[in-house]
Length: 406
Image (cartoon, one colour):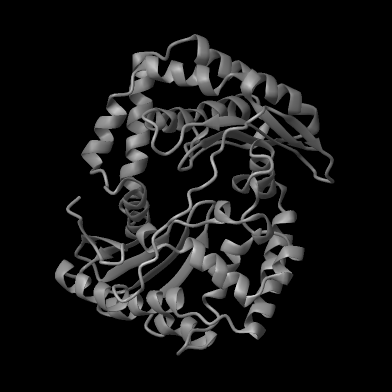
């Protein structure tokens, strides 16, 4: 991966992968998300992601939305627990148009009161839609369970009460504290020379006043396993069972990704899919998930099933955990699992928009991006002993929390 990088004087990092394509992709990743909110700011990071589209010093909301869409491009954004990202896709001749627009909405938004009032109601409807989808809501509630009373555990969307009292002053205070220039990465994949990209980056991002991070995130260190059952009027029983896991910098992260993929990754031949769905027909959907944050991680299994099959599913999952903890994988099993994971990563990298975002996030966290051959080597170096060690640390049922909607 022949990417090129550069750091502006204000600390904003630039990373670009030149690629012959009629379509370009670029975005700005800001190392600030919902876990950076103070107690009175619940939902602020996500609210700002919406609010920056509502007007700048020189554009109204309509002109922001039309700027790229008028030429067939698109602009979007998302908020996670640890980052806010604005990203664009466009024809390659519109690189400057995209970069100028990202800069304008990020650094020149004026947050008109009328627009903010309207957007609060839009987000409240978004919150309500999540409440109507237990298969989505349960993931937020599970992280709140395991990261109790901590910002990392709170859902990203916030709640109507807090949202309605947010003011322009509150928004500007959060941005001032958390939109730190040395914690921003502008990432790009497309057919533009790095010399020209640097020139445009200096023009639209280089004049931003330096605002380095001073405060550090609160440490996560008080996990206590817990089981919680919530009565809901649902047709299925929904369940998440999981544990804290390795952070993004841990040397065991790659092996944890492999174990997660084996248990309940996107392939229909994952161990739990073959067991709960194909063999017994107890669940239509079962999946495992591993999220690596900067200083901690979460591993979980989710499934939905008829109430009468719930205990059967739990028993089978526990049995699978115990098998991975007590029996070493066969060499052939491990080889197939490695090949599957690397194939999925390689295929995903063919999507240039996804590649741009993953490249930018890697540069944000590690100040580097691994080539595919390096990723393959890391996967190949995983041993059966590594998998068993991780299984014993993460899949210990005594250390797991469980959340059930029934």
